[in-house]
Length: 214
Image (cartoon, rainbow, N blue to C red; front, side, top):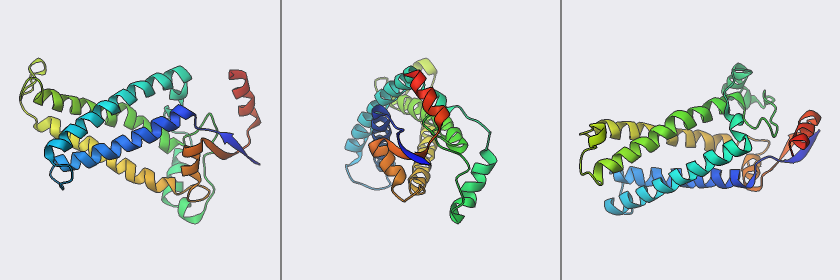
């Protein structure tokens, strides 16, 4: 039996969509800075890229605070339980309408593959992207072509790390956009992240636990 459940809270949805918009905009302006095309012009692209980067950092700070104060950070702790079945589902079962191997609930929103992917993004890819981006800006401003306190006198390594992290984020975004369409219907997951509500299997034990935590 399924029931419409409030899965994604207001800030969670705001954070998700703002993060998506900022990552897309950072990718768009970043590729222009690399000379892939011309839209804003180089100087404006750099300026908008830096503004978006600072907004992204502010969003990260608020998201970290929210995750720790609500306990939602526990959703991202990786687990190997059921991971083989989940990998098999993504590579084969999903194309045969096989049942999802992981039951989604309010307290377990992510399957094992999602946990592993998001954990990697949060502790490796995004920190690398933000840190290399800040070093990039510090190299240019205000010290003019070197970062004395870190003994950095070349942009090469910073640029490579920043670009690799950016490609990881773009790759994640492409896969994420595809997986959005693999819910019960093509728009189920999208509607859930817009409204917060999703049809889930009723779990008496979890409902009781949620009431106890209120």
